[in-house]
Length: 387
Image (cartoon, rainbow, N blue to C red):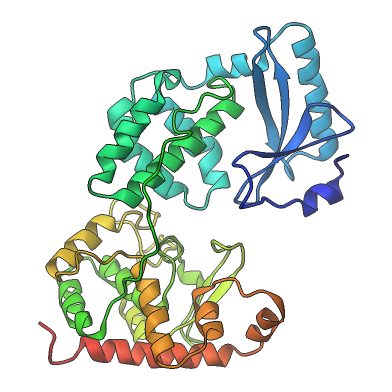
C-alpha cells in the first residue's frame, strides 16, 4: 500500500491479528506505520545490520510527525545504514542495560502513551519482574525463566500469571523495536498459558449483607466508596479509579467516563445511593480525582487488590473477584427482566448494527434499570441479615 495521510487515518488494529501489525509503504521500501491496540500509530523502519540481523527503529507517532517528515527521517536513517552504521545498536548502547532499566523504559516510553492499562503493567512488572531479575541483562532472560515464573505465580493466581507473561511479551516487543534487544528475542513467546475458562460467579442477594459489613470496616472512605461505586454502576475498575470530579454531575445524576476501554466516551446514570455516596465523600484540595491516592499527592488510588483481598476474606467471599461486580450487575438486571440491550448499554459493551442505533435513543431505560438495581442492592445491604 502506498501510504497517504487519509489511508493511515483509516487504518485500524486487528484484535484478531498478530501482536506486531505494520503496514509497509510501497513508495519507500522498508518504511511503514505500526498499529497498536490502543489506537496509536507510529512510523517505523526496518533494515539488516552487518550481521544480517533484522532490526526495527521507531521514528515517532503519526500525528506528531507528518507522513512527509517521517519519510524524510527514514531516508536519513537509511543513509546512515548505507554508510555502515547501526542506528538500533546506538539506541541500545544508550538505553536499558538491565531488566529494571528496561521496565522503566517500557513504562515511560511506551506503556503510558499506548496502553490504557499501563498502571497494571507497571504494578505487575515491579511486583514480579524487578525483584526477580532486575539486575540481569535483558538479553539473558530465557523462555525457561519466564515459564518458571508463570508456574510460580499460577500456583495461587492463574489469571495473574497469564497477564504477567503477556506484559513481558509486550515489553520485549517494545525492546526489539527500540533496538534494546535483538529482533526475535522474546523470552515470553510460546510460554503455554493456563486455561482460564469463563467465570459465572456473581454476588447473590444473601451475600450482600456480609459484603456490606466488611466494607464498613474499611477506614479510608475513598477506598470504601470505590467498591460501592463499582458495585452500583458496573463500571470498570481502572476507569472508576481514574474518574475525576469534573466529570460528575450530581444534579443530572451522571458520571462521565471519557475514552473508555472500547474507545468510546460513556455516561453512566447514577442511582440515589450512588449520588448519596459521592455527596458525602470528602474532596482532597488540589487533587482532581474522586478517589485520591493516600500516598502520592495529586494522583488517584492505583491498587485496590490488597484491600479487596482483606474485604472478601472478612466477608467469607474468597472466590469473588472485583470483575465479578460487573457480572453481578448484569445478572441482577437480567433476573429483573431487563433486556440485554439495556444491560450492554449500561456496562458499555459494544452494540453493533441497527440495534446500536436504537440503543442511543432510549437512555431513560438505562436510568430506570440503574435506579431499580441500586434500590434493591442497598435494601439487601441494610437487611436484618447484615452482620
